[in-house]
Image (cartoon, rainbow, N blue to C red; front, side, top):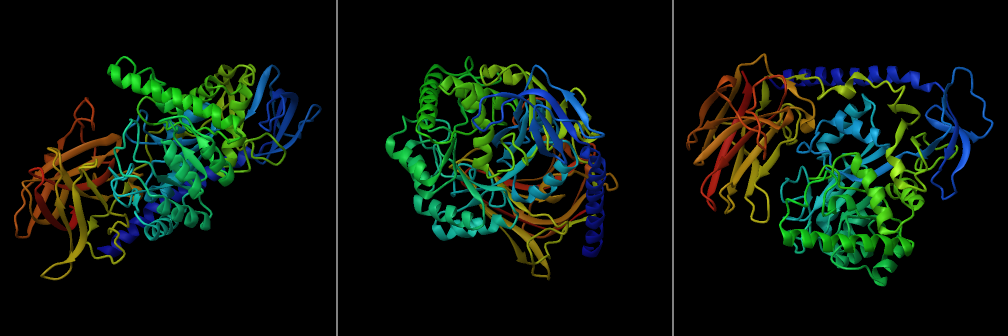
Length: 602
């Protein structure tokens, strides 16, 4: 069985690689030179805007001048009356399945339409980096950088994810080991959740101590990885700066910054990404103000006043202020939030020109991508054409005409996007019958995916241990033991992804159902099949202390409404499956256990 799974996954990889190669062939046409003629150039270097033409060859800026001649075969764009700027960056976003839209191509399209050509995604587990990078390479998209997430036990980011999603550390030794573990996946940088204070005026999660953070930063830098932090209190900002973090993400908003913090940030070269858009008392999408309780709204307004003041104070003190919006979170839509962030910088007291430099040159430097962020010869041709003069009137940044990523037009008149930019998912992969028999010594499933633990979140959280154990009759099984939290919704679950990182769906229409062996002790036990679009299908299971074989036909699975939302009951398709989930519940505070083995489609 294991050998057949290896062949099935080889076939799946060939399908994905073939898509990538086809895209590489299609992009060969992008080698056509491009001359953007007679634009007013704001180059992001601090120089005043000036009239010039810009020649692009092989995705990079080849020449800048007023009398440039178009090479043979070049495409010429008449930009008279338009402004040419470096592509924008957003260093803090979440491409989450719970946002709208949630599909990778649609999110990419929104950023390109806003002129955002480099984006940092804080949301993905390391297992998803490779398949998502491959997907992005097959479509027109911004350059997306992925953050490896490290928090403390019960810290923000760890209050809902297991260690295969967010690594948990609580000592210098654990921090070094955590960085080494995630570095194997080749993230673009590290996101450290150092502050238990999230969006309110009190800590609602645990915080990372300074010794642990310092060790994390030292180890990350040894691997060539920058460190961004979730930090929202001034005292935690000082600890982050002393530890040498590269970027403080989120606004310091419990009070005004002081000279001690300024000195620490200046000494350690720490930049500041305030994510003002996510803290607006009235969110970017217009929600929040009328729906909020009066005391909550007053608190938001106080916090936001501090946030605006601290942006201005740090900027005036020479601390690089950069753009990161937390887009993807509630009320903070992708793309438009980046533009709103620039407007909020101006509201905080920066000039429009300073806001543009923050969103281009300063952001590129903070992220460590020195090949972009300015319009200079040799730089990557990430470019934005707009009507107006946004260095004088920041609202003009919304008048997008054309957008280029590495010299390839991705938005505006004349742009031709691949079909994948209009797709809602990757093509479904074939899936072998054997999902997992728990015999691999490397801890991965028979499908070569990484198992995930899942439990109810928050500080009062179910504690579970999932491990492979020996069976009395030979071979191995997966055992989950848990002490449930005191919530009525407490549960413990183990997830078997059907593709790496649960990114590509699989097609199980050639099978009739799921078969497995089961034993356990839990009043509430169920199998859940998850599909694209957060669609879920469940079947109750009966647990008993002795092993027994169970078959769950697909036709008996019950569709569920959308996760945390009202909507239609999910309808079964079978060619869009992503995960098999085994979960147990019971009385709050009680203990439950179950074991599974030989999970197959039949």
